[in-house]
Length: 402
Image (cartoon, rainbow, N blue to C red; front, side, top):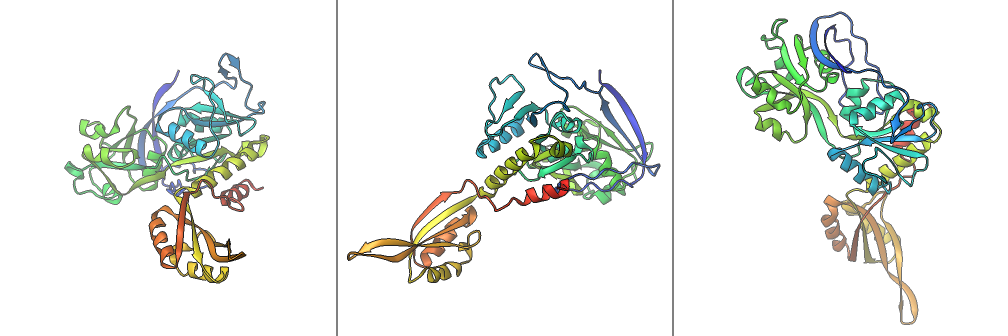
């Protein structure tokens, strides 16, 4: 049975600052030494899981013995829906025979099992070796991975699940004129007898952030439900929680402060270093997933524009196109002759140009095409843009030392 216990840390600020930038791997957190600040927080301690798992009445083999590659996905909520939608857009639709089962498959990826789990359990099972890959929020990776060197961020920007982990305080009372983390730290109110009380579910990143920023005399406590109510109820002075638009904070008379953003987060693809280097097929599956994700995300918001243009040569037409700033495309326009038969002869008075244009520049590009003699403009959305080689793949191989 889980046991609740309260821990007191006497620690220094020797722990390296928690970076708010997205990275491809974690660095190990330094061990706290005896020090100046006093932090109290509440954690849940659970018994270690058995290496044998029972699923649908069958006993699973130990993770070291299995041959299948396992991908963990969020089991419910908006993150789960958006994850399945993204995979479907990448032609990696998840097929779940029975919606009550936690295991599924992606037919396009052989020898891959999909396991639906709570986001925090995806990270925990990556660390334990029960999963090889996972898609979760970056905040979840940092909170439950806790600097574990085995976790590697394979793709750091899947472009959904955007939020930030932030410190928020009341707009009223003693905090009315406090607008920065520095001002909060310098308030004389916080003493060993009366510490700053912070309610949060992030019992790793919250205390670490306070340590790294020199806030002394801080007490952390966990709370179920809406944390925004904690200050108004008098059970906390501040909260550390995920923020999307900030509307809920404002409606509860709370405010974010300068320097109080702990982490900018969105959905990421994360992997176990050990699995990528030791489990057969894991690296190949990761490569294919990365290629498909990169190609689709790069094409999002891009359109193919095709137009006909009269000209004396392909070079002359290309020069006119490149004179317009919105018509350069990815590497430049593709120009090819348009053949027609006139007076019994095949001629090429027109040239077709093909360019790639971002959505926000689409109408301006059409206007520029018309200005240089373009006509018959055709526009269609792009689905994929494959590079010669995915930059994140090179980065992953470098991280793995391969």
